[in-house]
Length: 138
Image (cartoon, rainbow, N blue to C red; front, side, top):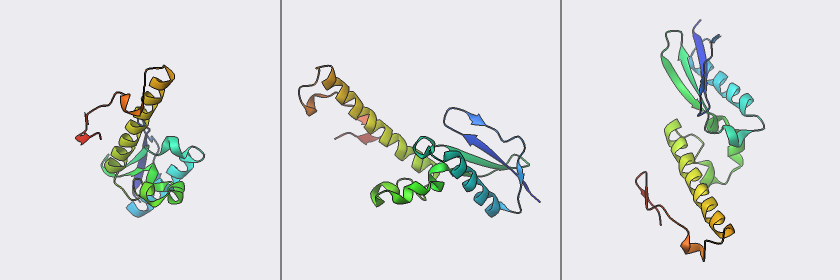
């Protein structure tokens, strides 16, 4: 029976699975990875959405990666326009979408801080980045 290893990448470090698990095939490994992701994310789904499991075989070959967001059952409760950004997306697409969202949140935070510090006269006075990852700010 094939042996699979489920390495956790939380964005700051990779935690290798040293023991692994014997499973009959890749589909069983994918189901196991989704269950592991749900268990690790339970009650902290927002924090773990960008985490992923890299699943490799005994020969160290990467079989697939599972983004925690794809196993997050709370995503199904989001409005469709937000849910599609995470559900059924490849790891790179979902991480890029999260990066774009994080950047937007940061821009709002900087704007609000400028008002708190008395630096902002109106919403249009906050500093804006003009170019980022090929996307223009409007």
